[in-house]
Image (cartoon, rainbow, N blue to C red; front, side):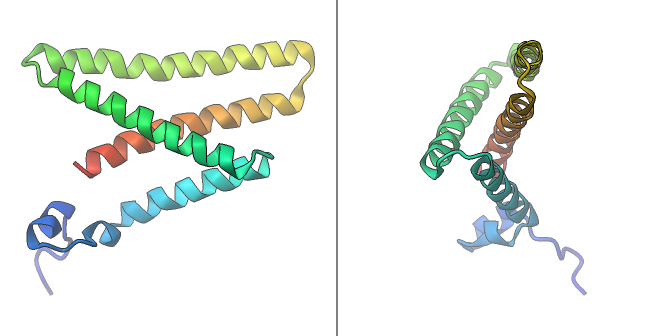
Length: 139
């Protein structure tokens, strides 16, 4: 048995294996989450073109945000602190927006819309997190 049986993506890139990312379990977990999210959005009645556009838009925005935060993090000493201060409030803002939408829907009597809005917010947050993770793992 080998000592280092687990092969990292960086080692596979060095060895020239182009399909190294497919050997990582986290790749399959991410793909499974994306497929599940698309299925849930389809079940909610959104058109497949809208789902694809949302996925592309979320990917582009997440990568752009990651690049900007990466550039800010390059500033010595202060950069990592600024990145920490910018990242967390975004999730707080998304959560607060979700609560406001829920409160308005409850007042107007839209029970199904509450579930849909909560699910869409959760999908957005999962998309943001997956974008950060994919950006981190593929650099």
